[in-house]
Image (cartoon, rainbow, N blue to C red; front, side, top):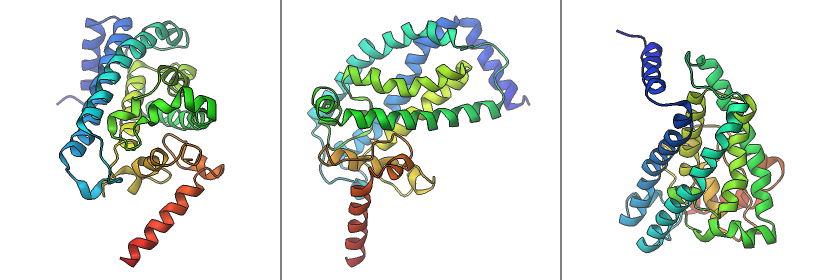
Length: 268
């Protein structure tokens, strides 16, 4: 039986033998993103539409089917007209920074260390960028589009003004741009980042939600609060972790609300 690593490298060899690096880094990357995004985001849409797992829904309010469909149609438009061109035109920059797709694949320790670095750096940059988007002018003209969905579901994670897609998208790509990763590492980072943001916007907090097991991870409950309160008081600006909001005191209202909810829960 072939070792898992050699099996993976054989599969990768097939990819690079049948597609150019440009095709893999652009069109295939886009299709991979779309597949992971929609497959992970559709369940919470369907849960909300058909009233499934209602006991785990964070907010009692629900979006109408028409409002959900509006989100999906605009996402397809934004992804094709904004995301895809950005991926294509950013390829030369990534290539210049050291992106490669050839064998051998990087050692698992390199992959893990780079992905962890990307998460920490992205969270730091995203926090400050997101906080800036909650200033009066930027919120009114840009970020308010994302907050049209005060009751989020997974697919709303990427529902945003095109300017915001470019602005906050920088936080996602700056880490890989700095390290010049292997395309395999870039794909893994992209998939994990998509799964994280979809979960954070899912609108559901399950017993198996990652925030119940991963220290410092924000998750759906943490981010749902950000969507359901007035933009000037929302806080919880970080994308993945909770420590940036804790350090800068932008989670105080959230923690007060959590304490009240826990106290009321004990009284029931």
